[in-house]
Image (cartoon, rainbow, N blue to C red):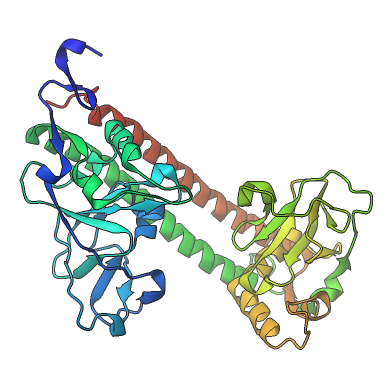
Length: 423
């Protein structure tokens, strides 16, 4: 860093032609509306007022320019909009989160564009900030909070223990570095090029997800047949015909990894997933699930919590889980895809709701009666090969998206600290 081109300020070294401003010298803060997720719907026939929720900023949109014309945002339920006064969003407004369970997440924000004629409000745990000073340009504002110096200042004013938050009065006093307008425009233009590439990649990911879901539905039900197998009939068999219940305990208290079954990712290490130990110190009653066996959460199967153990020779799961193993007529990858499909999740829900077992859940006796389609083994393997190839293509675009996002993050750090100059 050439120090002659920089000046020392209250927030450290910044380029000599940049200024340090108090947040409230640039932005006016407006009140927001405290609607929780329970008060929102994606049914656009209900009303016309949409909501940007703080949870979506944390998980999906942070430090982005949010295109309100194309992004699907939830609607506020009808009964909650009567006699309400709303501050509707305008192009270029900033939505800033005021709280986070993660210290790093305090002050995450988005800038909105293409509001057009829509009525959109910011929701629970957010600040609405609007530049009435004309000291910043559209497309640059969200990146102010991505500046490392601003991140440091935000951490200084954040308070809390389990949840960290920032107050309106402290946010107003926040000091932020501001480049000249021409440089802001250049920075915004450069980063918008990366945003376009990222948005295009996201669109491809969503298209492939939809394609893969449709392809799986067609192939796993026999509506589309693999070439060469068109004349071979499928049979519909109860699960108990093609597999058996396994209940092997851990009386010797083997020191094995403990797994938990999740709705989306199947069997995962419990400590990694929950971030803390939730299982018992005494593991003698836990079940052993060996490589090549299925397991599902007996009391939560209706959520699709079923997994396949393919990573460890042996692992442990809660005694409340059900374990089973297929016979030689089944390709486990094929069956796993069938059992995770939407149709079968509905089947679990239906059987769980209709269960007369006072202990609740869907136990083996009832689960094993469920009938599944069984092609001959070679066709099962051929179907899996097609679906695996489709999944591999999707994963490649997921990886490409991560790379683009990392590249943008690195470039952003250089531009926002003045290490790379555009003017």
